[in-house]
Image (cartoon, rainbow, N blue to C red; front, side, top):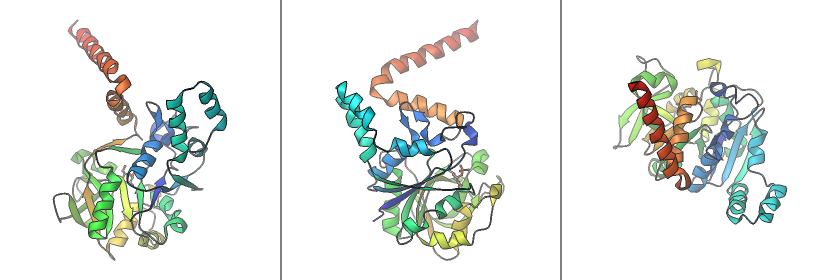
Length: 294
Ligand code: G1P
C-alpha cells in the first residue's frame, strides 16, 4: 500500500516568466483550476490522502488554495450557489496536505531529500507539480500497480521524439513485459548520442526510503543541481528499478507552448465550453485560411 505522496513545487518557474515572478507556476490555471489541484486530485484518485508539498519562496498561495476561506464561503452561501460552495469545500478537504519549505533551490533531488522525515519508513509516490497527466487510470495508480507486482522502485516513462531527449531524464533497460522495463541505465538530460533510449522520465515515481541514502551520496549534476535521476542511478547499483510506460497524455505546464495546448484541449473537454469553444476554434482557423488565400 502506498499511503504518502510528495509533490515538489519549489522551483522558480523561469520558463514561464514574467507571470511566475510573483506567482507560483503550480497555481497557473488550466481554465479555472490551478495545475497543482489536478496533481493533488491524481493522488486522491490513486488512494493517497497524505500529501507533502515541497514549497519555497513565493509559494504561499498554494497553502492558501488548500486552506479554508470562511469569508468567501459565506459570501457564496449568501448567493445560494450550492455547486460552487461544494466545489470550494471539496478543495480544502480533498487530502491531508503538509508543507515543508526548500530554502535554497538545489534541484529536484534536494527537494525530495526534504521529505526524509515524512517518508523514511515506507515507499511513497512522487508527482512533479508542473506535470498534469490525463488518463483513464490515474498514472500514480498505474505505478502503484507495478510496484505491488514487482516490489521495486518504479519510474513513469513515455516515448518522446529523439530530438527532445535532452530535455528529460532518460532510461535504458530490458523489457519484462509490454509496458515494463527492468532498468540498467538512467541519465539526466543526455545528448541525443548519449541517450540509452527515447524513454523519458514522465514526472511520476514510486520511491523506496533507500532513495534518501542515495541522495546523501549524490554529487551535483546537470545545472549544478542535485538530480533525482543521479540518485536513482546510484540506487540502481544496490537494488532493482523498473520503468512503467504510462497510458495517458502528459502535459508539461512548465513551458508556454505546452500550456497553451493544454488549455485548448481541456476547454474542448469541458461540457459547458466544448460546443462554443469548438465553434470559435473552427471560425479562427477559417479566418486564418481566408487571410492566407488573399
Ligand atoms: C525533471 C526531471 C527529469 C524528468 C522531467 C519530467 O526535469 O529531472 O528527469 O524527465 O522533470 O518533466 P525538469 O523538467 O524539472 O528539468
